[in-house]
Structures are given as C-alpha cells and as structure tokens.
Figure 1 (cartoon, one colour):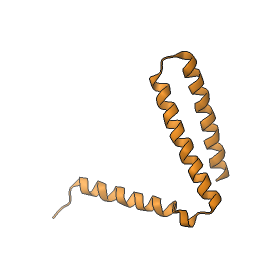
Figure 2 (cartoon, rainbow, N blue to C red):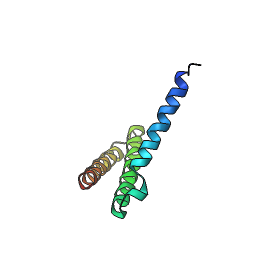
Figure 3 (cartoon, rainbow, N blue to C red):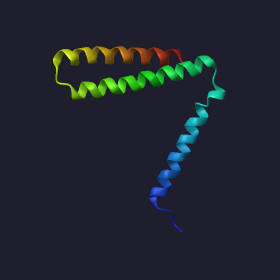
Figure 4 (cartoon, rainbow, N blue to C red):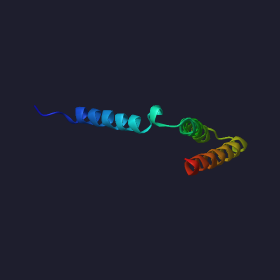
Amino acid sequence: MARGWESKAVDAQIHDASESHKNNNPRNLSPEQIDIVRQRKVLELSRVRVASDLENNPEPRYRTLLLRALEDLDAQLARLKAAG
C-alpha cells in the first residue's frame, strides 16, 4: 500500500530530529561545549522575543531600545559561533 505524503513528512521530521539529537548529544560534548549550546539557545530565544516585541510595539523610544538589544544579541551570537 502506498503511503501518503503526511506520513512521509512525519518520517522525515522524526529522522531529522534523531539526527539533530545525535549531533547534540550531551554525552558527546564537553562541559564547555554544553555551556556554549545552552548559551546559544538562551540568546536565540531572547532574540525571538525581542524581535516579536519590536514588531508589535509602535512606541519609537521603546523600538530604539529593542533595536539596540537586537544588535547586542546578534553580536553575542556571532561571538559564540566564532568561539564554538
């Protein structure tokens, strides 16, 4: 019986997740690498939040503050990528 595209998409997602998990398995990483991964995730989540706030806020002074925060987060992410 032929499988539908939905089940193929689910299989692909499961495969991608398992590959990602293998590559980021904490057992394969040093404590320093684990810390870098954690910091990167925190910065990425913060960036998403700031970008969302920036899109939804019309106040010019607050937008300026958010733009500065976004630039700072981008700089921190760049430093982590260069270090890791």
